[in-house]
Length: 298
Image (cartoon, rainbow, N blue to C red; front, side):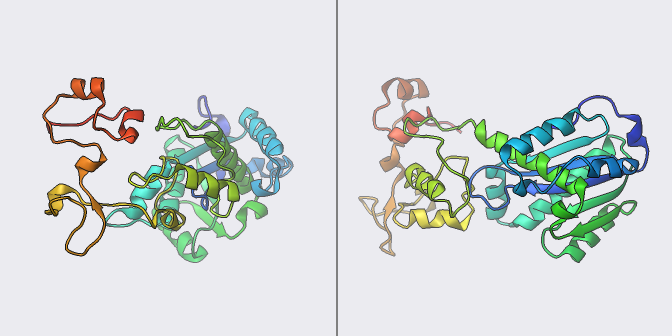
């Protein structure tokens, strides 16, 4: 999502940009990076628009300010919404990408996007992630023609970053409110609280929605350390191709509890997918409620 319409004349003048994020800490939902940009000559007017760090504003005020900046033809904005599955996949892959690196790439992606639109960016203000000096050097090396200011609490120091904070926060809040679950289990609900690990409502939601084999719904950032505490009694699955099991398939040489795939609803029969779908026999309820089919040919 971003500003609509053709490039305005002011975008051909020297412009400034603010960048901030929302949703870095929660265990649920996306992390959103937002930016706001305008002509440097608009800076004084921008300071009068009541933008402030989004965390200090009530939801109604954030929504009001977001709608006002969207309607202001002297302001441009854009967001990068990073799905919880993408966050977890990057943080758990063999060559791990940590959250700071993901954040840096998202911020630089926004700068690149706005430059490619033809906006003459000359100044960019960023709320720091990690060491401010190292981050500033990294940004300056990538974009040598732009002056960067990287600072702690930039969202409370620079109105252009405060505006970006509002863009990011409102976008994330709306994404959570309108979240469409990929899963279709009947017992799912949306009372997940703030999404922060310490929130009792979030904890209760995680406990209710955990599955001993398949973990959590895709709303959850399963790479977060918070999640591991919910699976102390979870089943350890041994993929049959990885090694032989005992006759009953319940234990290995280390004595750990394991399950054959056949015990989870995968059968060794040669029935086709139509037969599987029509009968549903021998399949775990988890597969049935999510309309998952067995693959017999690869």
